[in-house]
Amino acid sequence: MPAPTPDPAPSATDIATAWQRERPGTPTESIEIVTPIWRLAKLFTDDRNRALREAGIDAATLDLLAVIRRSGPPYTLSTREIARRTLVTAGAISQRVARAERNGLVRRTPGSVGRRTVLVALTPEGHALIERSVDTVLGREAALVSGLSEDERPALIALLDKLMTDVRLRTAREES
Image (cartoon, rainbow, N blue to C red; front, side, top):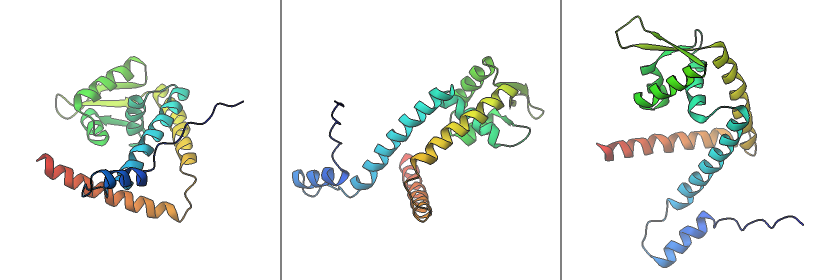
């Protein structure tokens, strides 16, 4: 006999309703938007991590190799440009590059402009790994969102872009 399926977590609507009941006046209008986003992020992250394990790559290495691969031939970027495109600190990029270089996935060379410029290029092994990995990861993610129709996708993309832009502006103002 199969194991019973655990009860799903309460719906975002149920959570908002409970807060409204327990604390009337509490702002709950975000719950039905933010809670599903958090839950989806967890599901996507967990699934991506499984796909990455199967592909033999970790998320940080995928991020590094992918940003270089997307740059086009000759598949070389400065560490500064990698940091800008990945939104990761220079220190973290340095660690990622060093690890990928030890694994034979990238090669570092001094840049021609400025003493501290370091260029990072994909090796043939790194190129092969990102080619396999990106198909695995993006293929899996395409399957996960296949429940949305061709008409629903552009609407969701537009709404997510609008929300992302607005949240970035609001959080940037609060940080400054």
